[in-house]
Length: 414
Ligand SMILES: Cc1cc2nc3c(=O)[nH]c(=O)nc-3n(C[C@H](O)[C@H](O)[C@H](O)COP(=O)(O)OP(=O)(O)OC[C@H]3O[C@@H](n4cnc5c(N)ncnc54)[C@H](O)[C@@H]3O)c2cc1C
Image 1 (cartoon, helix red, strand yellow):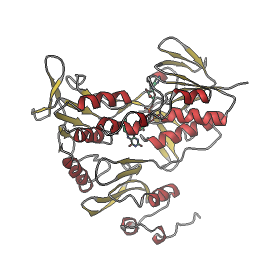
Image 2 (tube, rainbow, N blue to C red; image 1 turned 120 degrees about the vertical axis):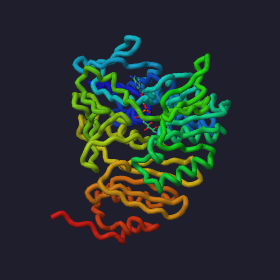
Image 3 (tube, rainbow, N blue to C red; image 1 turned 135 degrees about the vertical axis):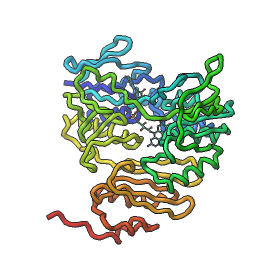
Image 4 (cartoon, rainbow, N blue to C red; image 1 turned 90 degrees about the vertical axis):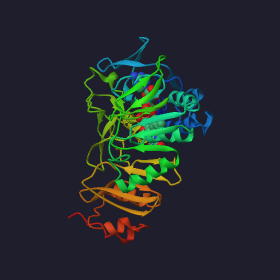
C-alpha cells in the first residue's frame, strides 16, 4: 500500500525531511504544507538582505519546481489548525483535510512580543521570515534612530542591521553584557567593542518599559526602566521564540517548552514525529533532553525524522554537535554544542579580538564559544562527540593551538 507522509512546515527541517523521504520511499505520497507564501529560503541569509548587502535571488533555496520535479505536493499559504491523531487527519484554515500515515510537525517558532505598552506599534520589528526582512530593510533605509532589545544571537543581527543601515541605535540589555549565559564579561567586551565600531551603543542593566508612539501609531521613542525616553523610529525586538505547538493541542503529544521527542524524533503519540527548532529532543551526547535553534541541527533532525518515519522509528538516532556563527564583525565568532549549559567553564583571552570559553559537564566538553580564531572548532567538536573525559587538562584545551595528541589517552571502560 502507498504510504502517505505529511509535513507541516517548509523550513529547513520540513524541507530536508521531504527530500529524504523521497529518497527513502520513492513510491510514497509526500505533502508539505506551509503558511508562508514562498518555498524554502535561507533564513540565515535574510539578515544580509535586511542589511542591504544582498539581493533577494540568492536567498531562495527551492523554487516551486523543485517540489514538482520530486513529486512532492507543496501547499503554500496554508495554515494547519488541527490534528486528529485517531483519524490520522489534519485540518487547515480553509477546512481542507489531509490524511496521513506518518506526520512530521516542523513548525518552528514565532518571535515573542515584549509585554509592554505599544509593543505592536508601527516600526517595531520582530525578525523571523523573509517578509520580516523585507519590511526591516525598507524601514531601516529611511530610519535615523533605533533601539534593539534582546541580548542573544538574533538580537545581535538586528543591532548589526542598524549599524549597516547607518541608524544611530542603542542596544538595551538586561544584564551587564551580551549573551550573558554563554559569555563572561571579558569575552562579551570584544562583542561590545565590535558593536560600538558599527555605531551601535550597548546599554547595560537596562530594558524596555514601554514605547512611545505618535498620532499615527508609529513608534518614536523607547522608555527604559529608569524612565528615560530614547528616540527610536526603528525598533528591533528579539527576546525569544514561542514554539508553534498550538496545532498539537488536544492530540496528547507531550510538550514542555517545545515538542518532546526521543532521539529518533518520535513524539509519544503513534505516527507523529517532530523536527527542527521546536523540539526538545533526547540528546545522546548530553544524555538528557536538550534544545537547539540552529540551521544545521534542524536540517539533520529533518533527515533523521524522515528515515525513522519510513523505518517505524528503527533507523538512525540524532547525534549532532551544532554550531552557529556570526559574521557581522571583523573577527569571526562561533558557538557550538550547548554553550549555556555545564557545571564548569574554562576560558582564556588571547588578544583584543581572540577569546575562547568551553562549557564542561562531568569533565566532558559539551559546548563553547570561540571568538577570533575558529581553528580549534573541529578538535573541540570531536571531543564532544567522543564524550571524552578531559578533566584536569585545562592547559591543553586552552593552548592557542589545540593538539589532541597532547591530551591524556581516554580511559578504557572497565
Ligand atoms: C534572522 C535569523 C538569522 C539566523 N541566523 C542563523 C545562523 O547564522 N546560523 C544558524 O545556525 N541558525 C540561524 N538562524 C536559526 C535558523 O534559521 C533556524 O534554527 C532554522 O531555520 C529552524 O528551522 P525549522 O525548519 O525548525 O523552523 P522554521 O524555519 O521556523 O520553519 C517552520 C515553518 O513552519 C511554518 N508553520 C508554522 N506553523 C504552521 C502551521 N500551523 N501551518 C503551516 N505552517 C506552519 C512557519 O511559517 C515556517 O515556515 C537564524 C534565524 C533567523 C530568523
